[in-house]
Length: 469
Image (cartoon, rainbow, N blue to C red; front, side):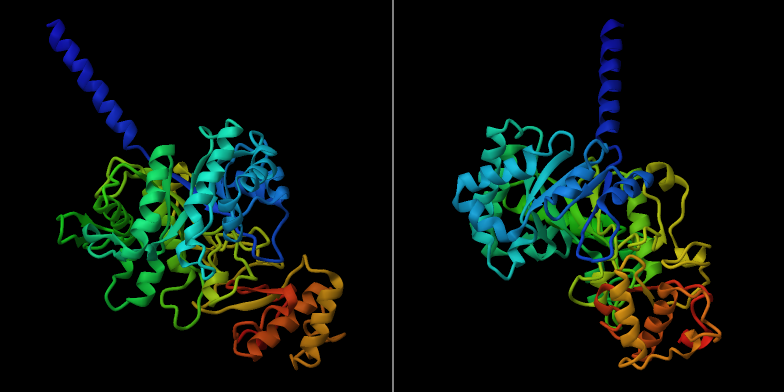
């Protein structure tokens, strides 16, 4: 009887251990700052805490940001930029100085948990791949000297394009030209230091380029028949899980089965150019919201069901100075004025009950002021950046109403939209007139950082009906 009781106890412990191992993962967010209209780092920290976000990933080691994050309880992934890879790889003292100035100066008040050495280095046009692993090793050696190597992990985010084959997932493989020079040495380093592989994966890109072959519901984590992997028989109900398992398969193919993975970037744009199929607010809300629910309430992927998913959403804010197509400036969960682009759950409690919806379906505050009314899908407006310098706003207003030939007659004294008689209100009217007159073309709502695009119809306080094209 005692023996049976003992084995029963052991069985219970094993079962409980399995439950713990297969528990929920974590959701963090990327805090990019390629913009000129973002709130101060102190306000950003307040925003993160108010939303229950306790993990953030940066693209540098900006001192004002790291100082603002001190004693916040938020864990931080910082980055050594690609342009410093060659110097870091070539000179241990350079790495030592960088760690001293950017890590030990702030830790442990700022909870730095990892350093991303470079970002998507394999696609860097500066051809910095050969410096990556030596730079990682030198930064690690610097952490050892500071006795921080057990507290702070080192990795490097790779783009999903590092794979030669990703479909079916079981056939996942890295590009041959990367395997020996950098993939194997990097994975060796990650194993030796107990770190994990960082991967940036965007189902949006795959869907947008292949919308005739990929189900939108499959890409957005919605109910769908699923896709059965012809190689191993596993059934996938979402594209992101298939992408993650393709990376696991690629590592397995070169005998690295035991390296963990974190998805350091994934997201869906709320707006895009005409040829960016699927880029809209509704899809962005569905993708990010359903992903959060999957991560916080579910298990791992079909190939690794016991490994919780850990992801960082891209991104915290819409960043108005990012180059490239319109989508690049519209991945944010929040506008620069800290208002939500759309509603999604961000905590486990919200994930169990909340729905993902465009903010347009609710009553909310717009970036300038006033009530939001429903907008047609794809409609956008241009509004003044209230945080811009007054001289810059005035100069931009003068241009829009003058050389830009915007219709500014409604904001003249006594006219229908003269009130409220503020520079910001008048500028918003003029900027939007110019933007609509130029068919909402890319670059027509910038005004040197004095304006930005919104996808929620602004209050009638600021715009007359003829300004709503």
